[in-house]
Length: 544
Ligand code: COA
Image (cartoon, rainbow, N blue to C red; front, top):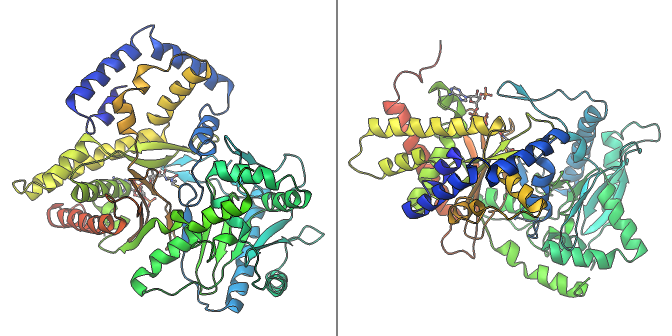
């Protein structure tokens, strides 16, 4: 509760804070609501393998009615490949499929090495759900289709080209995977059978609001052939989308255009009909060397179909997304490590400065931290907007504040963020715990405690900045859309000497502008780099 209070402090007025303090005192009083709910939560924890994951997946993903495209499913832009025609596309696709099957074999034969973070082994359970799984739309909430345990797993993938879906067997009858040459041959056959026709871009249905898609899905599934086709896609190991060429844009916009292609496919006249957004894993390969991955996060009738398609064609969704991708080359994580600072924490504090300069205030910021130190763990939230970050950003915009003091405040803000990160990674964050207490009250029909009805609770968890580090050795960046209409999403991949960023916002919101925030972020990082390099002492000198 003390940590919760500290987290709302920089975001609410003194009067609201006092009210929240009062509610906290009542909530945690001996014999009060908090104690009773905590006891129930502990009983739940004692009988379950993981007390929060099912509730978290349900409330964060399956109950959300927003479209998966942009609003939920993250995309990864992979480095551009060295080909520029369909021949190169098919050859690369064959290699990529072979590589994915090779990786899958490691999961099947349990030879995948356990991963570690900060010295702690991580739960590997999620790997086993990545393949042959799919989200299923429902009118009220979605569900997840997983391969039934004990049954022989599927042996085929889905290949989509020109809005046509193909079932491609990728294993020989003796269980060995097809070779790259065999896969290449099969992809050529698919290409020969999938010339552009007047086919409806049926896949775009999966990009709609979940309620609308849920209703359409129910209608579609009444027909036997539709049902078998959908099941074939849902049960396939994964999807490979062979995209049609897209319009060329200026070099400056190329990275952002590529991110858009991966995130939503560019609209129903472009490649969005080549997706099944419900599918957990989709690999996207264009003819121009572009490639990427789109994944669905949960594992992991109604109106006539024409109306739904019209609706999706309008694509307010897609034309609304404002993306700015850039590579920051001033420094990477190695320099920050030499300064004995957590790179992730420095980037988060710089992001606070960027937002403050862009909007004149801080906003609730969520960073995802992995809970995979725990069996079946998913994520906890790091609340990056701290009072220490507020003090730092104020100092940076106060002309009377000198560099040494700014540096000291920077270090304090980074230290506070690092402590919150360690707590989150240890399962000691506050967000999933509070969610658990709230859901415990709802599950048993108790009155939901006032604490959760309080303005501070709503204000402090309206995530205008949804952020996440997805680190990879490959020079790539993941991207996803904002969580709220007037918010941003910022995803980044810190590499040794540079950092890749993807910033998104919605065009329909006049207050936000991805490029403007990206520009402020570059300046904030420059300022942080200057402070460290010019006033940061000798710590940064390379060890001999
Ligand atoms: N001094 C020197 N080095 C330091 C340091 C310090 N004070 N603090 C950290 N470092 C080092 C680390 O040891 C690490 O070294 P390595 O590159 O040799 O491994 C490196 O700096 C990076 O550490 P840091 O930037 O602090 O954070 P992290 O890489 O541990 O990442 C999280 C932190 C929270 C992002 C990460 O643990 C996590 O949870 N990632 C998953 C997030 C997720 O699920 N996102 C989903 C979004 S879809």
